[in-house]
Length: 103
Image (cartoon, rainbow, N blue to C red; front, side, top):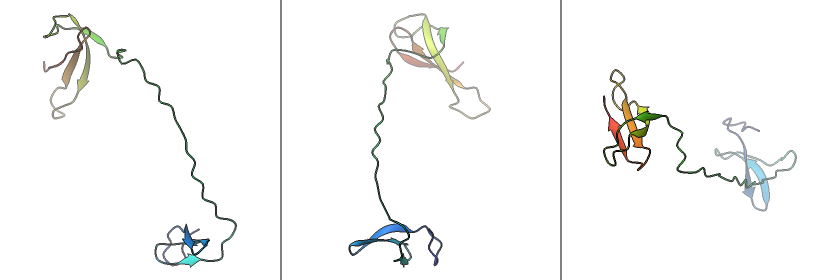
């Protein structure tokens, strides 16, 4: 239902002890067609937490500067301008130390 004055959507508003359809411009429709029913549904969703240690990144051979381990997870991010190469981030498989590789 739309307001005949301004064209906005009419919303249910309380007027005395009655619920009528009204608009922000001040128009109210006292002739309610049907029954106005407001209902709030509460939906609960359960979030499943995955194992934090499970890595889903590719592995490469790179030496960790902290522990010396020779394998690390990596991912690429465009941190600079589009005409420059992306930055390679690495995360040690063993100690989880993170560092960048700009080469």
